[in-house]
Length: 91
Length: 216
Image 1 (cartoon, each protein chain N blue to C red):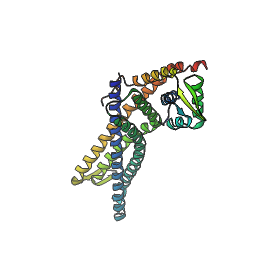
Image 2: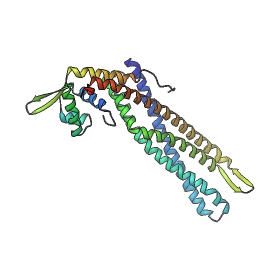
Image 3: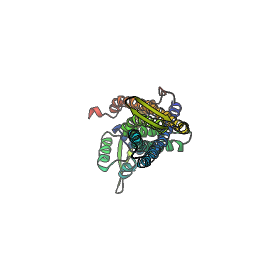
Image 4: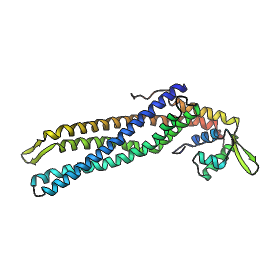
């Protein structure tokens, strides 16, 4: 997914993608981020305990915690709510 | 809730896609129409360069034809940018069939919002360009159907070529109607999506609270 997204949209995408363990490269590729901003987003989510780092040999992977579920559920409900009402013009 | 949200999202995406495709087709038509008039006028000017009457008439047609060509080109370029993004979203949605999981729907909504944020200014330009394109093609149709036009201090006199009136009128009427309809739909979509962006901005406080950003 690319385009102009808010930080909240990027957080959601990272957390949903990291339901299964993912490497840093896979995350930045999937979320269309550069490494600098990718590191910032991941650091924030790890600090807030929405993600945990799992070390497997020499590889580090990121996995979403149970706490992340609260955020992703709220996010999804808010975005789907945008389509609760039809547009005020005839299609 | 999910079913109705999905049905509405699907319907909006399809309609927006159709309006965008119609725009590309008619933008190409306006441009082709302008080019054909430009070429015709250039040949006529060359052949009847010494006719004083034609010198009064041709600059108007040439100018409108030139505006139509440039408007058509600008219109196509603007439409293609919007079309590519909406086509990707529509293809993803169609590829999922009737069963779209909640998460996939949310992702598509986020994609659409991101695409709209990227193309907000372009959509606004398209609203204006659609109207201008319609007006240009309409004027070209009228001027193209004229056999003779004379402007003097006594007034304006003109002769209409009956054989040219009907095809020109039908074509220009079609283009003008599609342009106006596109302009209307783009402005309505833009309004609705602006409201949605506003709603999302309003909801960000809640997301921020959930993410504990305020306590950083």
